[in-house]
Length: 266
Image 1: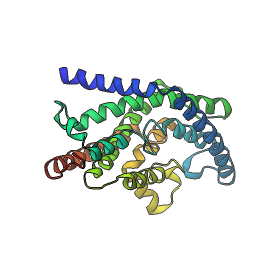
Image 2: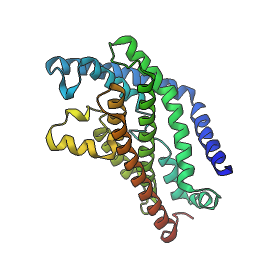
Image 3: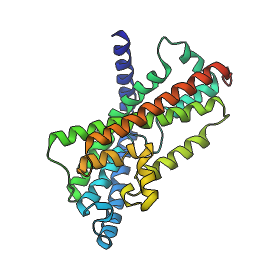
Image 4: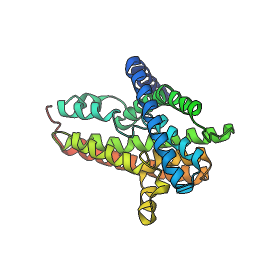
């Protein structure tokens, strides 16, 4: 019970930490809204030429755009969460202090990152989605159950995102600079999450592969739940399977790193 309260406190601390950056948050909301408008008009032109592309009508395609802008920071599609700090702590040797804490390293960072994700969803997610609903005809659901299912999918997507970025952060135990791995991860995330185009648009085998990869949990899975184009339970099961598998991989890699690798700088 005490450990549970500790992780809740860590998550709350992560929320408060990002809440202090008010100017950066407002700038992010503005950027997401402007980029959303540009992308929405691009989708309008594309869906005008190819109606029902990917199984979406025009309103669903526009909704997909704004859901993407709402989730961009919440699930850290382009990185920018805890992993940069974690890699710096590994490089400097400060990670040794983290390992001596009477808490689990992976769960500590997970709790902190979920606190960040909640703040980003509320602060940088709700405003662009609201702006999109005011500017364009979106296909937003009216059922509270659909919204609840969407939030569950977002939560699972955030956990999958954390698990991938935790692996990226751990790479710093072996690399002098993990920036290259982080850049590869966010480029892959942009392409394979559906942030550029819905994964349903990708043809044939390529489409099947990218929809099966863990990055689909970031955006495509929550969007399909919100739009009603997928049954939530199989979506949750797939996201949960990836979350468990990747968290387990992170735990094993953490064990190898802390047993066999000398911390750089420490």
